[in-house]
Amino acid sequence: MLNLDKVNISYGIIQVIYDVTLHLDEGECVALLGSNGTGKTTILNALSGESKIMSGTITFCGERIENLSASERYEMGIIQVPEGGKIFPHMTVKENLMMGASCRQKAWDSRKETLERVYSIFPKLKERFNQEAKLLSGGERQIMVIGRGLMACPRLLMIDEPSLGLAPKILLEIYSTMKLLKDEMVTILLAEQNVSQALNLCSRGYVLETGRVVMEDSSESLLSNDYIKTAYLGL
Image 1 (cartoon, helix red, strand yellow):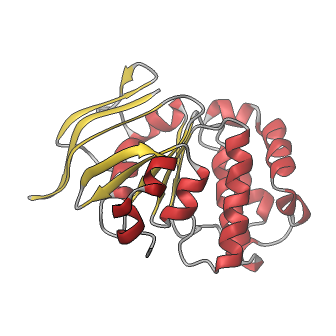
Image 2: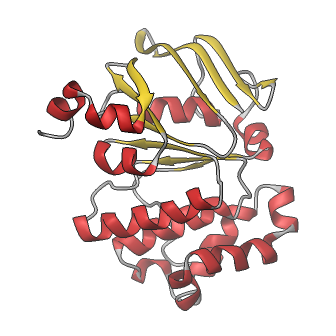
């Protein structure tokens, strides 16, 4: 479904991504792992069209997309959920969710049916549908922005650092929520520094360090790898 082949990215004269190659199959949940500053968000931005690549190719559903605009990729169903739970604070939960469908014609046409699906997956959002988003807890906000991404009817849902700034109890709730998406066979690329949680959710993972993929394997193999245990799991 998605293939990156030897992708390089720079900010001005400073190169930040080096020859990154990765792939996702339809229905997969794959983790892009690494600490802050390793290039995870940059790769997601390159996929969504927010960042340009220097060289390499990006193929989505058999079509080269590296030269397409962000809006064209959005229309294809490449949807990014940004880090930090960004919301429209003075709009209601329902209005925030509807914003996810507003920029893609296919999503807008099916917005009522999709909203009911989102409510069925995330019943807390239905309970608070008429509440201003600024009144939600941090975990509820994160659930809402994931729901807003679903409202766009994604073919690929990219979720950036969903655990950022959340307490451990809320973190477990967020990952339980994302497991529901995985069970529904939503194709997910998850950028995350919480290696343990991400690998327990995803089937495979890529480990980024200083803009390079240094390791790629099944989640089971990565969790049992001595380097991963020492560098990322504190074991």
